[in-house]
Image 1: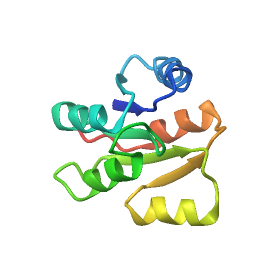
Image 2 (image 1 turned 90 degrees about the horizontal axis):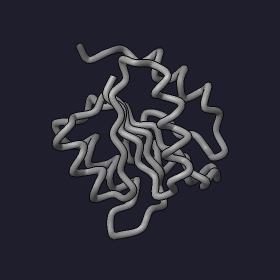
Image 3 (image 1 turned 60 degrees about the horizontal axis):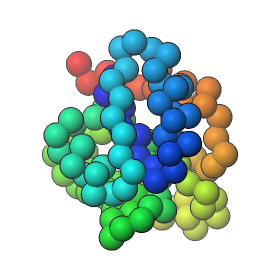
Length: 122
């Protein structure tokens, strides 16, 4: 499974890297901002993206999510991970195309379960 982790917080990226590296079949990529995420999506075509919403720069997680879901990469499963947990934040994330929206703090075990239950692209 090709997994892209996008978060400006190095500790969050490290936690997810450790979580997903327990499965040798996972191939991990990391980005710390929206532009890096877009570049990796185009070059690596991940199966799933764990995506923070609030990041530095002109491109936030919602922009990345919308790009994925309106492009040739739309089959990519997008999980938004955000500290923004209001009902309106969640609704906006889902409207922009996210498959799931989880608020921080999250359970690494829950993330593993999401990856394990995701059908493989092939």
